Image 1 (cartoon, rainbow over the protein chains, first blue to last red):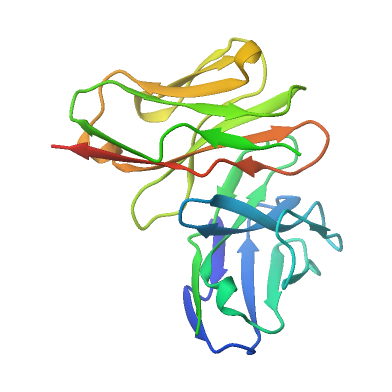
Image 2: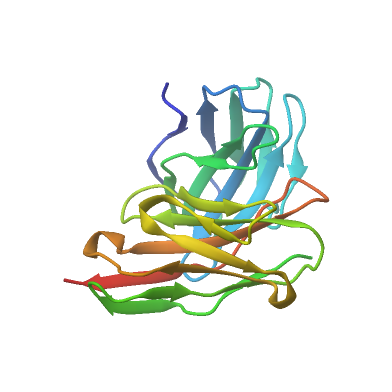
Length: 112
Length: 113
């Protein structure tokens, strides 16, 4: 039981490049979340999903897109990376009704 | 919209000192409250949570938190900290109207041996 995994762990992009971050969970959780963590700002919600095929915007969705084609996977895409998207990205999943979030190890993204 | 504030940005304590970290939220309805901890280089882990019932909740590693509804607060406490408690602590709130969780900015705790 791996819990929540994230791929890749580190990435450096040039401005304008695109990439996809993958989050996978093997706990059959319904809800999944993408956050970014910046110093002094805590975690801010980018997008979330309440089930396969559904997505919703969080607090800071601009510049990001997401997809949840399979229940176990939640993808976060950056179509045209900007330096302001330099951050640590965390994925989390929640079992329906428990509200306890299980976090992945994070992806450190640097955009130059 | 819901917001969460944490009173201290950085707290420095000596081992065996008592700890209290403040957390206040803005929404006055029914909420679920959480404290998460992030040890250096690791991902966030749940310390404790409050849904309903006894406002004093106990979590892992000797931590506890008290929910005071009238003050919109959910402060984290530990009677005697250890060097291994050095970490960043995040308060989070979820209200009953959606699936969003709102996190506070975090408090960095440094425990000196």
